[in-house]
Length: 114
Image (cartoon, rainbow, N blue to C red; front, side, top):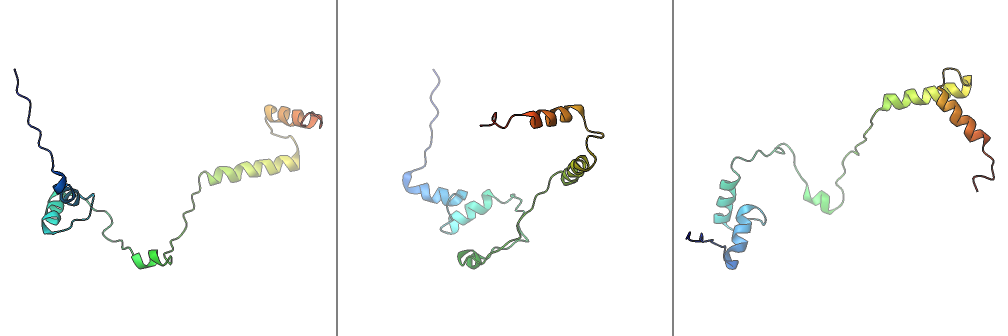
């Protein structure tokens, strides 16, 4: 019969030390800091050229440019232009299903919507 493997558990008293060594807490002494540095020595830190001003964050004076995301802007402009042309020229070059939809909408009785 196989012997069960002995599982080594971390003692509760040493839990904070291991959490500090692995980065879940701040390292509290040189031993934890050395363990942390050894554990993450090959980590590729991508924010080397960035800096954080904690005083600006605390004083709420930290401002960054808002991000504006535009997707398919050219397509939207083209759609608007085609709709403007429909309003000016009528139903020229307009698909039949759009014409049918417009007729259905215009032929609805106003009492149907209530």
